[in-house]
Amino acid sequence: MNSRVLLLNGSTWEPLAIITVPRAINLLLAGKAVVIEESGKYLKTIRDQFPVPSVVALRTYVNVPRRQAHWSRKGVLVRDDFTCIYCGAKPGATVRGKLLAKNDFTVDHILPKSRGGRDLWTNTACACPACNHRKGDRLPNEIGMKLRWEPKIPRTSYLVIAIGSGPDVWKRYIEY
Ligand SMILES: [Zn+2]
Image (cartoon, rainbow, N blue to C red; front, side, top):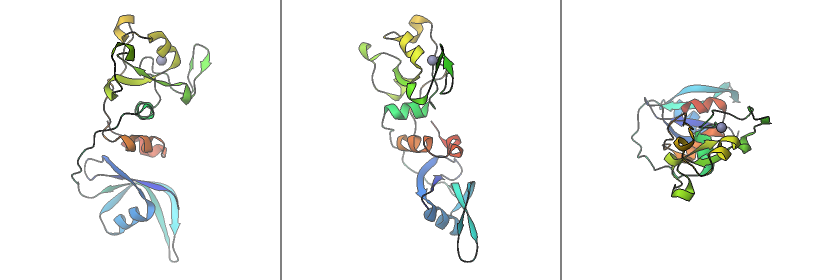
């Protein structure tokens, strides 16, 4: 059983960790966690079947110190769900006759690197090839491009990437 379970904090439902199925089941059996989403799979024991959770939440809130999220290109793309911050294009969209795939999207520096822009969560966002090309070394407002959202620092970097590559039901628990 190599499925993984997303563990959420109590009451806030912020993601805390990705744990193994046996650990999740131990938390459930000990009454320390509740099932939020089931995986649709079952763990068979001699006597019965146990529904395998996909997301569980602790019953009580635990105070976990926040770690500063480490910036990475992949982290930016996952944070933005591969959506262009300028035009909103996503993988599967056709922009100027080109069908876009995930790997067509790149990280744009809002204040360009050539002008001192740094690799910061708040200065980087996902962009489609057309918008990235159009923007070049300029600031969005210099050429009338608008940000569709404000890029934010994710609370948990490794979790953002892990959740982004996990089952779809996990994605609604990504927080920024
Ligand atoms: Zn775009």
